[in-house]
Length: 117
Length: 113
Image (tube, rainbow over all chains, first blue to last red; front, side, top):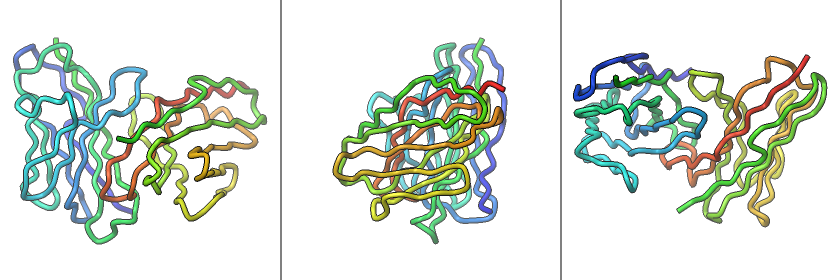
């Protein structure tokens, strides 16, 4: 089946550090990837939709200058949390859809647990 | 935009009992309704989904029903087992692949032996 690889799985760093998270579709091409954030005991909240070769679309309330998204190829999207602070600590999950099968469900990565000290 | 409400927030059942989780949605244009199971610290796993042209779908112990007129859909788990314990999320979208998913707030299901 379709596999989405997300890396790293866990990050612990100091306040002010920038952190890059990668989301790769391993066996399919993904025109569209989605980035979600999940705080403890809460639901998944969409942060942005990443489109290959164009600017990402951010949800209301998500700072595009703080959460930089790059989708430079059909198999890779990156999310960079710039100058991270403790309130950015969360579980970040990406998902991707296969460009050849738009009616198929999105495939989720394993998530990245980000902890800012 | 779409708004998905999910109830209950927690559900405790005895092993072997049935569990039902209900969701409502607001956008009549939504046509795809997946259900996810998420264990602590892990990715959401798709367990079943239904499209708006179908009223019911079943996969072994799991079934989903959809009432388009009332804009609500439900997850039914029969003969529950302790390993069914997890957080379950419903979601809605206009298209399974390319459209954004709007998630419910989740239901923590606890199945006691």
